[in-house]
Length: 158
Image (cartoon, rainbow, N blue to C red; front, top):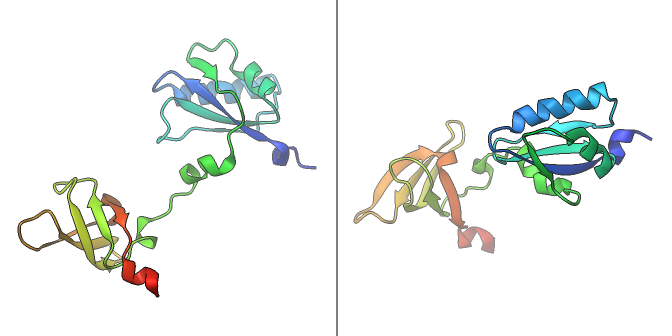
């Protein structure tokens, strides 16, 4: 049986901004001491945490022991679906439909609500009509600047 298949994911709390330092240290220590740390994960979106794939918590504890930037080992095992969203980035374009109500989360229209009127998948742009403006104002924005608030109810009925 492949040992990597039996690995579990454990979280380690680190000092802020020291995630990559801790990851490098743990990987080097595990290699030198021949510990069974299968992988070390650092996510930009998860500040203060490093994730280790290992057979058990004892191996993780031995790998992080005595390093000043490590605050603690988070008790328990992390389920893969909890971190999967950080591994695979899915374009918001796949979720957007014409008529959806969205919020602009970045840029000059930040915080404004809008309805989608056109989607240009190739350019990754979406044309929306701002609802918070005193008159209908169509604006073209990058799809990554949007967050879905409410799906189009007509699309659900089909």
